[in-house]
Image (cartoon, rainbow, N blue to C red; front, side):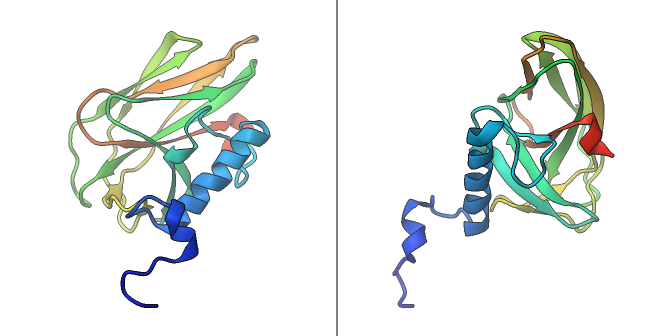
Amino acid sequence: MAAGRRRPGDRHRPKGVPLRTTLLALLTALGVAAGSRAASAADTLVPAADAASATLVTGGNLSGVYHRLEPGGSLDFATTGPATLIVEVRRRLPAVGDRPPGVKVRVLGDGALVMELVAGQPAVAGTRIHDGRGGTLSGPDRATVTVPAGGERLTLEAPAGGTDLLVQVKTDAAAD
């Protein structure tokens, strides 16, 4: 292919975003439209309005889709209570061995503070974040959240400043 020519699928993809990430975001968006669950993991919840946050992570005995939570940002997940959810938070770190101070993630249920989850694990060797930003993934910090009957929304909020986070929210049955 001549230099400067774009492939047909490139015209709608933002510059610098790998095709794999674009396809993953599209599949996640289709999962949202089909009923708020990801196509790749039936019991992993997808943020209500942010399929573009889908990020593939591999390596270190890990492979899956996480959702990027930017500093100062939030992600909303539709829930149907009663349910038990597992919230997993990982940090993007610059290198293995780095261990900056922990980050407090606010977990809200229908707008009310449920808990603060501290993400503070060190980097895991061999992990790869497939979104063009680079970095190494930290180990997981997990919390169990009980959604009461009538519960409709789980929100994760990141503090301003610092690094972005990668999160998964699963039903308790999917965590096994």
